[in-house]
Amino acid sequence: MQFGKVANPEHIDFSLPKDHSFTENVFDTSFIGKTQFSIGCAKWNRQDLKDFYPRGTKDELTYYSSQFNSIELNATYYKLYPEEQFQKWYDKTPSDFKFYPKIPQEISHYHQLHHNCYPIVENYLNNVSVLKHKLGSIFLQMNENFAPNEFNYLEDFIQTWPKEIPLSVELRHTDWFNNPIISEKLYKLYVDKNISNIITDTAGRRDLLHMSLTSSKVFIRFVGANHPSDFQRLDDWIDRIESWANKGIESIAFFVHQNIEIESVLLSAHFIKKLNQRLGLNLKVPKTLDNINGIQTRLF
Image (cartoon, rainbow, N blue to C red; front, side, top):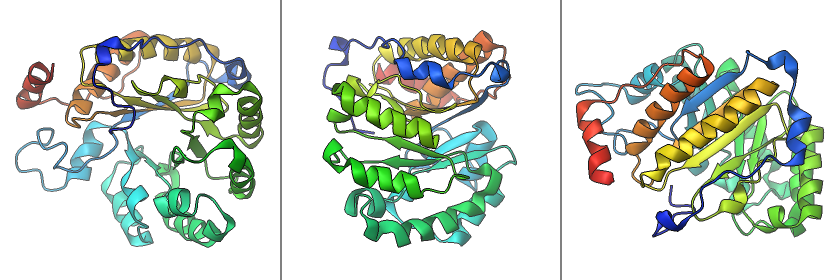
């Protein structure tokens, strides 16, 4: 992912801000000790993760899902896949695997949530619903030009969204976050409709670290900077996640991106191992082959 990439990450203050006041509203002590974790990468194709797959691997998704329990499914952003394709993905993965598919750009970027996109939304939902219990949350990402003056389109879209299908939203125009009146109106809408407010941690857009949880289902997108600080940043996230889990949170989805994609496996393995140690979990740590381990030295 190139979004938020900077030339000199060593100059960035990567510390996590304090929680927004809205965050306190989502904690529920009944979830203490029961938080579910979905951790993975954004894609599984061999071209980007070629050193992740053992020689002779016949199907990448089958192998990927043996190492990770979830995927941020960015492939669905680029085309409207038919029902049959979602069924194939469903059939290839374990019963506890979760997909977090992105809403197609035809809806989010070309039509920008205007009402004429609704038939496309209905078609998309009919197809993606084939994932059944393996559907973690659908992921809406708007472009940087989608500003607060178009709030009514976002509100209408959310008002018509089926309550039984989880929805997470990432907004990128900075005015959603730097104006307290606008952000509080937005967060109230999310809370009222149980929408997850995606937190994106990327070097060049620290304003997207709004730290406002609006649902008991948390969605975090971590974008590494191909810099040694990536590992400390992940450790800082473990501190924050431990704090949230101890207060009671239903689920946390955490997806790792990298400009050099293969390193996302290394970062994910580091994150899962540390999270297991800290919270006493037993999440599978993905295998990192010898040729992957050597990449860390070359990158840094």
